[in-house]
Length: 412
Length: 76
Image (tube, each protein chain N blue to C red):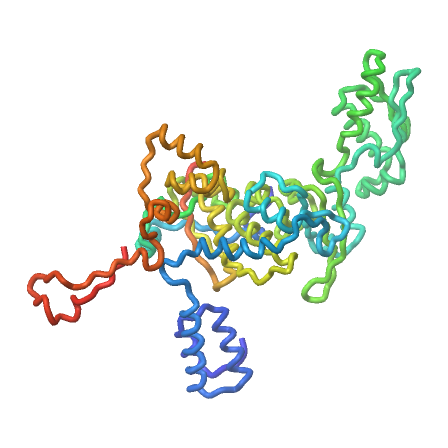
């Protein structure tokens, strides 16, 4: 904090401003060099403006949020692929991404992770590559050639020594890797293998063309190293705030829980764009945080960063209110409203009315939608405040001339 | 296992004692069941938290300094 005299500090500290605004006031005061009286005036003015901009009781914040996100939404692109910064990785952006987020889809269209690395891994390209190979799913086609020997009913795999050495940098001997690969083939395909150096051969139990080709098909799907769901990893050098550089990995496909377990991965900064995975691994609060972050990023990417973050915070709060992730919409929040009329007004009107009739539901008319439908004042803003003129006399007091009982505003 | 509480996205979770719960419910004028919920299986929950406990979450707020929010632990 910048230097200010202690009496100015007492004035600012005793105001009802949040920390951030207090700091800003200090900054301004210190930069201008003002007197104690001026500082008090400044603080009072800031406090007035701050209290003025707060939401009034009974303000319809949800409606305001809906419009504040909805209007910019009309200016979003219908579909854009490509991620700002990492051109090689395709990521759903724009309106489809926003819809995907508020619908709380189980898996996003283009799942991805941003993997940060621990210090020694982040600075050394070789070390960073170790993590890449632990993440990226390695299939047999990346390791060598497959050929089928129809005469002897054998599948033959010629492993590429160079590739093995590259992808298993921690294992010294390539032979060992070849043994490991043979084991994986035996386990996942249920066949016996014969290995000679870099060549692995195996075949079906009974000579059969169909089984032979089926084995080749299965072999292509086996993951030998890395995480099954991670199909591609891009490594990028990024500038840190303090001027240092670090390697950051971007993945196509995600497996957040598994990725955090990998050695070298910084489990405090690594994130993923699948809110359900975050929810499973880190809990609701982290999911809430991710919803805000992802929606904000989606809007920002489209140049709509003037949407106030409070609206997105409200959306995230409501989506995570019951301890799990609920979608906004018919299957989530809107569908679980108490009022029949409110639900019917949203989507699939007839179904809701029919179900309600069958179950004998009662509508208490507490919400906004249902009161608009029946033509009653809604319980928002002035609609929820009763104003009573003092006509009745209270015990022990004269009915007239008593200022206190003349009018009385009461909110219930 | 990864220590979930170390992740940047996870704010501090602490069990609120009964006296604290009373104060909070009084301040907001709500019932215990009106609070937002957190499931018992939530990975960020303190180990000794049980159904019916109120969890105090200290968020690093985007708009204010620190934001205290409360969640009631519920079954699933």
